[in-house]
Length: 123
Ligand SMILES: [Zn+2]
Image (cartoon, rainbow, N blue to C red; front, top):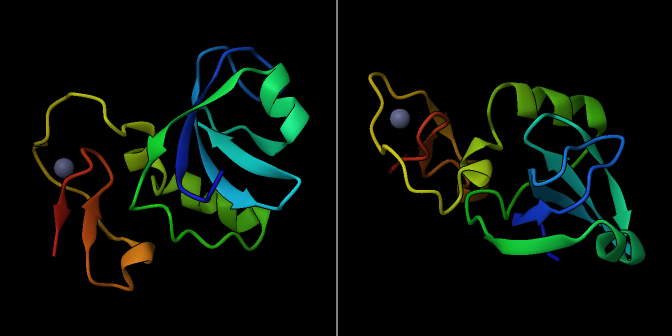
């Protein structure tokens, strides 16, 4: 699974609830690292992916260029809503919010802003 892949997880683990959505933020070859909606994150070996029933939902182009450096940075990125477009990926819902919270999409090399509340994009 490549970075930016959106997944659902069937079973609860120490870091996630059953049915939560997650975003793959790192692919280390023998497995992937996933961060979940509630903020938990961890690495999953290919076996773990099977055991926990991790299923691919799609790939969020806004997050496919995410460059994982360390977990402190990861937590900060989570806190400022960087992964929200991924958690909302493909979900129907209001595309408008009262006041957009624009943030530059790192995958776009600064060309596109994404609203961290509704996922709307602007060039
Ligand atoms: Zn918005």
